[in-house]
Image (cartoon, rainbow, N blue to C red; front, side):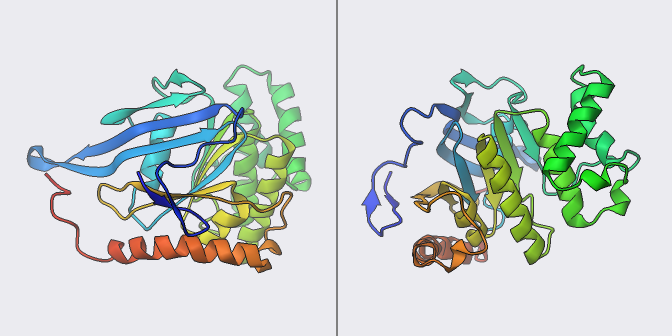
Length: 289
């Protein structure tokens, strides 16, 4: 398969994770169909190949409705591919991906529990004694800048504070893989920058494999090691794989001013723009069968 590179050339294979990194998530020829009425079906994703290395941060971007979240859900084990396979650290994925933590766009906080209890609950259901779970939860709330908010309920927190609690809720269980579906989408621009910086800080402290879905190209480039581009749906495909050779650690508010960042943005947008325009056109014939 031929795809455009960040330098404007082409190559016949998508890029691989760094040598020796190990493969955390391996999507091989993944196709996902959804059943419709009258025996018909809708193909959301077609023959997707994606390898995410251990400790690698991969952002997935594409037009609305192209199957980004669908692909993420396949990696989470929430969807079973119609064709192809999903492997996690070399083993076929059967059922839910127990090695992954999932941060959704919408908060999954329990309104009747405090911030401390919301973070601790993940350990408690795994059998950790309540006192130890709460001690560790308190430490995690400190790491996300909410040490003084442990006893507050979700309705007492701002959108950004809720997202910090949700992030601590996922990371406290020490997953080897983090799946993130537009996690900062509902936030205002300033809060998104702050949350992106916090995410990079936590990830740099203890690197995990990350699959990060976003509509925001600037956010994708600022955060990721690689940016993967999906085509417009239906039957969406992975059409581009761009390495992001920007030095780490990164200040995601300042790095956007660098010439290299702007070059990467231009090159990726050149491919993405065509797919965004397609997404607002007619559905191609043959997608529903």
